[in-house]
Length: 105
Length: 118
Image (cartoon, rainbow over all chains, first blue to last red; front, side, top):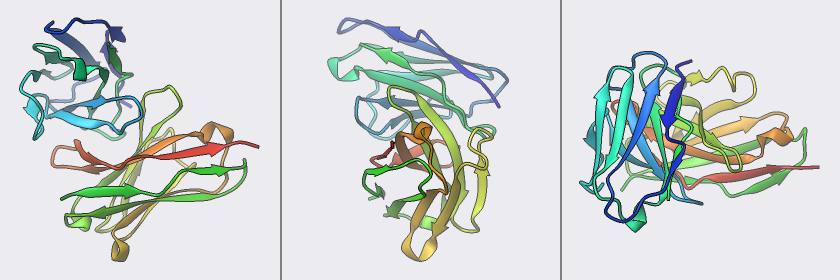
């Protein structure tokens, strides 16, 4: 299985801060890398797919980057509604493993 | 509008069987893989497996191989996740989600919470 490792595990930010989350794969996944947001008690929502493509309706303050085995999710100016846990996922090779999550407070 | 609506929460005893469902609407059900994702209490997301409704081609994570069965009923546009003998460690919320072009999960069900306790 491809292992996905996110850092940090949690972070605290103030409104307007720039926040970056890193995701590393144990082997190359090309750009088959997706990011999800999950608020407590809710289903995850797709934010970014194919490493940097924003899913429909996602605010432009979210952006993705990277390729191969190292990726980032950036929130350019964090807002109160961005409090959530963020997960990366590789969809290059089954099982399509997730990272352990990063909690943004 | 694409929607995935899952069956309701359930409480079972160890050793009992269970089949939960995921009703899809708003798109061509046979065209997209459906994935199942587990989230244990306080835990992260775990990809369990996926099934292609067109031909029931299935890929299951080694972590769940032999523990669950994925199936579909194309006449009802519904996917199922089934256990033959539940364990306490199966207590979790289970999500179904639709695979899109690059394997991203673009639409999710609301989740089904399963509690297994004696």
